[in-house]
Amino acid sequence: MGDGDVRTHIVLPARLVKDIDELVGRRKRSQFFARLAAKEVKRLRLVAAVEAAAGSLAETDVPEWATPEQAHAWVREQRSAGVGDRDRRLWGDAWDGAEPDAADDAPEGPAEP
Image (cartoon, rainbow, N blue to C red; front, side, top):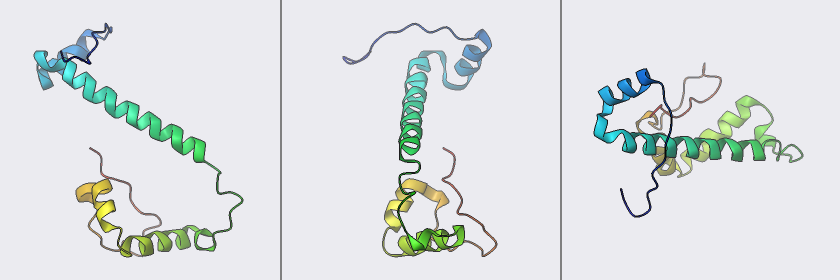
């Protein structure tokens, strides 16, 4: 345990602990749960931020976002204007910079970790 670590007690189903031990090893449970908890905290904070921002542009007139098709075109234009490096960092290998097929109604989300 490091200086900033805190020992805690959690109760889990025996089968779940057995599965985790088989996958990561008994001596790596804490690392597994720390990584998992950190990812979930990050996800929950993102959800909270999205919920807090929901509707914040409702009174804003942005002609480029009038329809899903126009919003999609605007996003593609922004991406081709030099923000590709940021997208690669966010989307990883799932982002190839290619234009989606015309049949695509919406851009795909980031690849699952």
